[in-house]
Length: 317
Ligand SMILES: [Zn+2]
Image 1 (cartoon, rainbow, N blue to C red):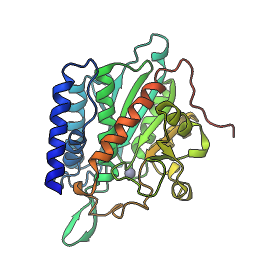
Image 2 (cartoon, rainbow, N blue to C red):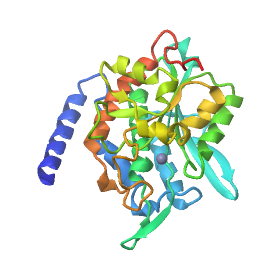
Image 3 (cartoon, rainbow, N blue to C red):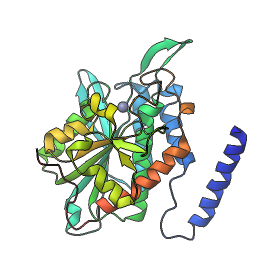
Image 4 (tube, rainbow, N blue to C red):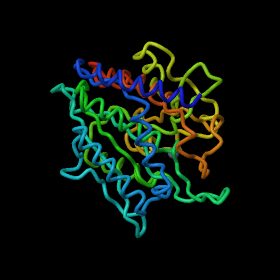
């Protein structure tokens, strides 16, 4: 079964590539490109991407090189790295910029984020101690990079887009706290922030594909569904119960800006047994699902970046 499937994937990839040349728009995100980045970040050689290690340093370098090759500009002068210290450790977010095409709207910013760090080592199982963090959160990183590639190529965003891959999330959202404070100090005109976490496995029991944390705080879910024309985003009771809104990198941005800053995810821990487990490995993810979800999310972000007014809003408190 696996061989037949991979043959089909190969055929699909080739047909996309050959038709892609004629189109003006860059062809859709493929499962193989999504998997390639996850496979690099979650390889045993990266040693679980803990902040301050060589495993995360080379991961950041790969992300920077990819941004450069896509035509995503460094956000801070000539460096993609937003440096800070975690005690004595060197830490760095990787931050890129895709300028909006509309003279008036490009001053407004949509921030797309995901943490690319992980916890390093986990509880040893069958002699394996490396917490690879494929779903958490090589998956989200891979999504943000694929979306960045799309907008850098198509230049269809009227508002500007900041692409941020956060470090030290696993140490207490330290990377996103640092960047949120920095952007607030710089008076960045943020519109909204969408953060990607654990999008590597599908739900089997829902009438939606992903949820947003803080569902009840804003019209984010409704607007995304309206923009894509179907129920892509729903409500997760588990996410609410465990306050997942406060447990990822969207939260420091919400605290600084009091704007819709939310995490999109397809995993509320009911559908994945390997959270912070050494078996959160490359082969546990469903790359067709991921590519599909990314391809469905891109038009929502595109629309978000092009509306004449800011349609996504917090509900009154
Ligand atoms: Zn995570």
